[in-house]
Image (cartoon, rainbow, N blue to C red; front, top):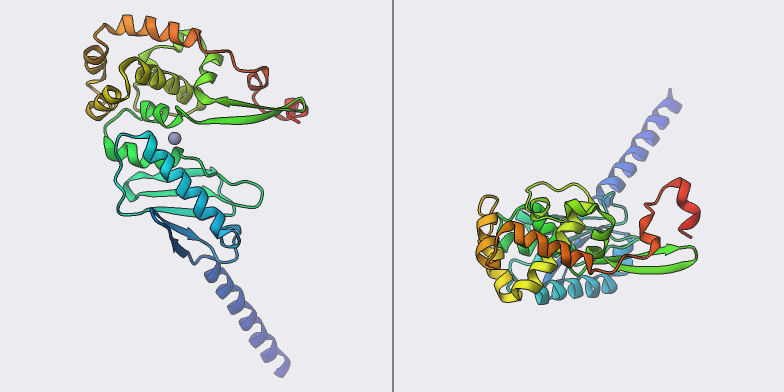
Length: 259
Ligand SMILES: [Zn+2]
């Protein structure tokens, strides 16, 4: 009987320690920088490398600020850091939150998610895929392939999609699901920015919505949708082909190539 009591007490204390540990792990600690509130878990990689995280995300914030015509600086953007996060990174634009994986093996510090917040604030009615394209204009990735490292900007990957998709109808859609769509949109956003000039591009951006885009493209480019599509097609054709490394999507079968 006495032994059973001890067992119960032991079991209860064990369970309490586990519960407290779980609770403690779910606490967010906060650190403020000039433009950001950085949230991280106790004992996480981010806590151990906090100064580095603060610098990286302040740099991303400043890069976003330099790219856009204007941004709201307050309230401070909240940056949530996780040792593990399935999607690597995402933004909750209405809450001014960005969520990133920031662990030992992989850390995402891209400007991309910050841009989603500021672009949403600049104009929440822009078709989603075009917004995604603008976020990708200056973004790229690197890839190891047959022992070498290759770097590329995302818009260049438009060359790996079928040429009948290099049209505005593919860009101004309010749904977005894969990288090909984002890369076509990035190529168009860059084409539009270079054709119209940055100032006019942002003026147009602020007026866009899901219904007026054809009319606005006509007004700002000063030509028909068909003529814009012909020009866009020429523009994409002169973008250099991406290195062979990017023609292979990663799969277990091709894993040996990506080393
Ligand atoms: Zn995005």
